Image (cartoon, rainbow, N blue to C red):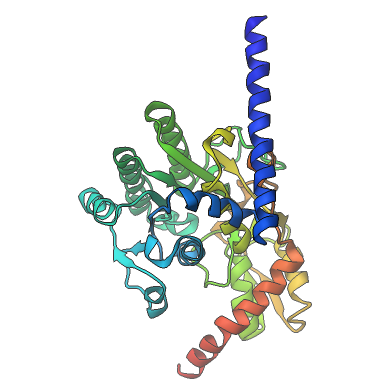
Length: 370
């Protein structure tokens, strides 16, 4: 009886904290004219502006994430890093440094020299690329992750490591895929992400590490494709706008969860700033929509009516068939108020505009100069 009362009281306190937190966010939003995510960040900035290191920063998420965080925390407080040469654009908005995640002492020096508080770890080989070079994927995705987890523990950093729909396998329920279920993926990318989830949770419970992880679906942005199984949803805009044709490597009815990059970054920012007492888990599913190639292409036809689509499934089809079709992110929506803004129609409209403005002129020039 006493135990039941204690549990009920604990649940009441948690609900009260969550309710007060969400009400405070909305009040701050109204007073400042900001959206709810921005008001949360402003509240944290009053306490201490974090200094943030982003590893693997020149990939699909890193550059856009850095831009977003610099708008909130200042250019000098967000350090972008990678092992490849940055573009002039990457250097224009804030610090960029060389950082090899396999060099632990080098990472230690960066954390100390730049007084890092948060670490966002994007360095990884994606699903299709990882299958082509498994030994390298093990080094980058597993050994590199070990280094940053241990680094975060040693220096008491808040660490964010993204996970993926690829962390699930053929034994997982696919429609919907809940937050906690059997995983057992069949790619080295998925295996490495499950390893990161479990190790991060262990370090949280064993050492008190502030580990946070979101399982992202396919993330769609105007950046060129980077070797993922869901990249058809990016490539069709680049190739379709340039050549008016696209050959899809997935079958037309292959349904996968997706989200636009603006929603992805919004979820990341909100999650990083959610008080620990609201987090019932350290790993959450987040998503915005699910669609098939055929459904996406039908929407693209509204903007490129003369687009020619063909299908030639390859090894990525087998990978996709073992992944979730619909992602259940109800726990993220319940615990910390996650909400997406982009549906399929709005996503396609934004992608056509962004690729047309930012990439199509360059692609056309490159085609002329060949």
